Length: 283
Image 1 (tube, rainbow, N blue to C red):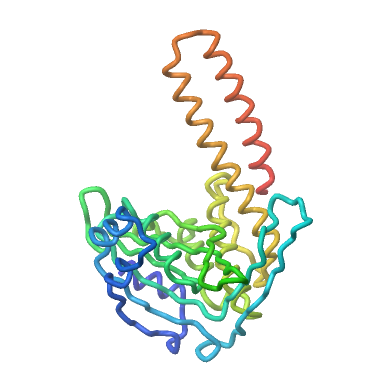
Image 2: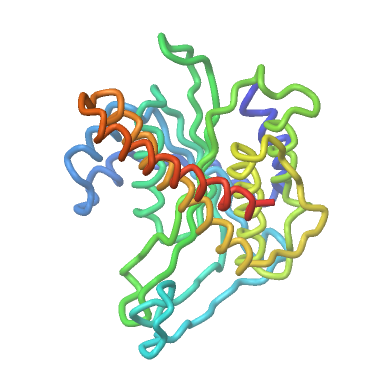
């Protein structure tokens, strides 16, 4: 019921349905996977279904192809050292039935790295376990290809939702509003890059809601891609500082010397101030 409710929200056109099973063996034989990756695939994945393919023959959206040349003289920290290609010719929806959520993030990320297409991954915990009730976790990833070698794939950033349960999808809840914001009709149909970045925009809004306690669904289908990248950078900085603050707090608990505790507390206060500044930028 949870999964069908989600696809009802997503409202993918019938023509996009494929429903093709993908053998785990195809992933396991990938030479780039570590032994830990292969163990996660073997133990945690029950089934992989290539559920939908959105391409210009199944939806009225144009493919997108852009070559971005290197900026050798650009000192901007976000510039790329080599030319790369943005290729969004189609979007695939991959449904993965998992036995546990413990390595859900690892599984989503290794599959994103294994398939060069833009993917919308749906991780479905189908059965009740000792730790969890049935849930879905969603994952996106922005990717680029090396211009010199298209087989070289680089993931720019992953976007992963928390696990959603049926009980959370109450009327007007952040979870329900977020899932409804992903419906196909609400995305940009200019090209597949803007279409996919429309989903990214909603994932970023959900990520922001952890800090602002509200989810604001955009009323516009248009996507400001540079603004989305900037927000992603701010959220990454917040996550990094939160991890650093957590580490300092742990050191304070363990520290026996008063002078050292004072130093650590000063460091913690400075990080809190920076976090306040960055959170304000999300507004």
